[in-house]
Length: 275
Ligand code: PAF
Image (cartoon, rainbow, N blue to C red; front, side):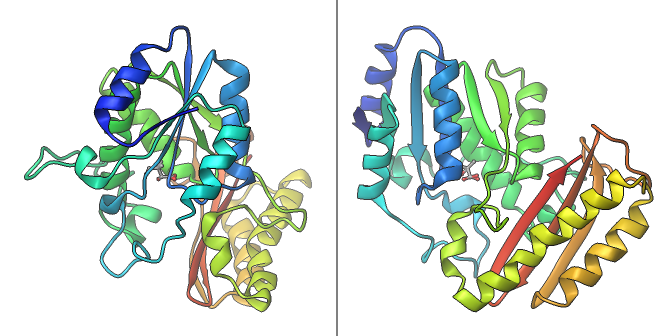
C-alpha cells in the first residue's frame, strides 16, 4: 500500500493505477462501517483509494475538531489489511489555500435538519469532497447512508457540476444491539451508550408501524418522540422526508427516509432508516 501525505505523491501514485478506481473518503478512526465501504469498493473496482483527513471546514466553532478521534497507526494497518492500494493522508495545507473559492450547499436542502443544527457544515463537506474527488478521480465513491443528508447533497453536487464519479450509497452498519456505528460512539459512557439505543429502537418501532400499515408521518414521529424523550438528554429532530429531503405527510415505501438526531450526555448522535 502506498501512503501519500502530499498531492505530488498522490498524483504520481494515482497516475500508475489503471482500470476502475473505488474511493472511500473518511475522517479516520476507522470502524466496521468504514470497512464495509472499503470492502464494497474492493469488490467493485480494480483499485481502492482511501483518504483520511479530519476536515476543519465542516466543524463549527465549539464542535469537536480538536478532540475528534485520531488513530493514524491503527487506521493505516486496517487499510493495509483491507487491501487498499493508495492511502491519502494530507495535511491541511495540501488541501486548502488562502482566500479560496467557496462552495455553498443548496439553500434549502443544505440548511434544514443537520444543516439547521450545524449551519455551514455541508458547505465544508462539499468543499472537501469536491477537492478529494478532483484529486483522486475515482470511477466510484462510496458513502454510508448513516449520513443521509450528506449523501444526498454529495449526489446533487456531482449531478449539478457534471462530475464524472458515480456515487454509491452503502447500508448502515450497526453493533449487535442496534447502535449505528460512528467514530463518535467512543465518547459515550456505558450508561449513555445504553440510553443511545433509543435512537435505533425508535426507528425499529417506526418500521413496525409501517409494516402494520401506518403511513401518517405525524403519528409515526409522535411515537418515536415518546421513545426518545424518555432516554436522550436533548432531542434535536425527528423527521420524515422523501429521498430528495422534502418533508412528507405520508410514507411512500421505497421513497422515504426517517431521520433522528439527539444528544446523549455531551455526544450528538444521528441515525436513520430508509423505507
Ligand atoms: O463522512 C465523513 O466522514 C466526512 O464528512 C467526509 C465525507 C469524509 C468529508 O470530510
